[in-house]
Length: 109
Image 1 (spheres, rainbow, N blue to C red):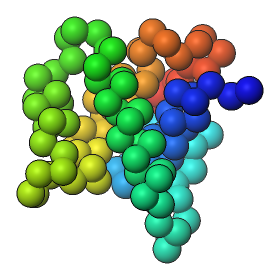
Image 2 (image 1 turned 180 degrees about the vertical axis):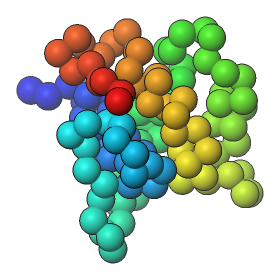
Image 3 (image 1 turned 90 degrees about the vertical axis):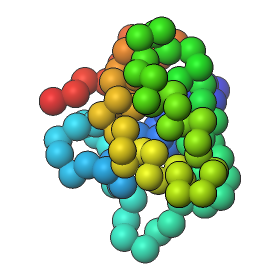
Image 4 (image 1 turned 135 degrees about the vertical axis):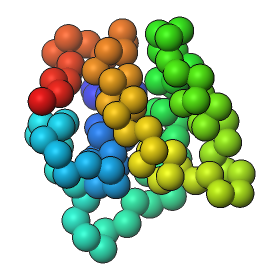
């Protein structure tokens, strides 16, 4: 059985790749095809994954990241803007998060 956190991180990586970066980061992750939107349930999973990562991450997580995350859902702060603004920090959280097994560790090029 696939770990649900791992499944959510894969979806989060796809979301980051689709929205924020065309650079060679997140090897093996492809952006979503043009015109194929993320569903409400996928966006909820992405939000839950971010919440988990930020809540359980190293205490040195930037305060701006934490403050902006708390603003998601309020006027002018939506999930896509948060991810676009903080994609590099999100990737760093994914790379260094202690609950991701070494088998699933990311490399950033």
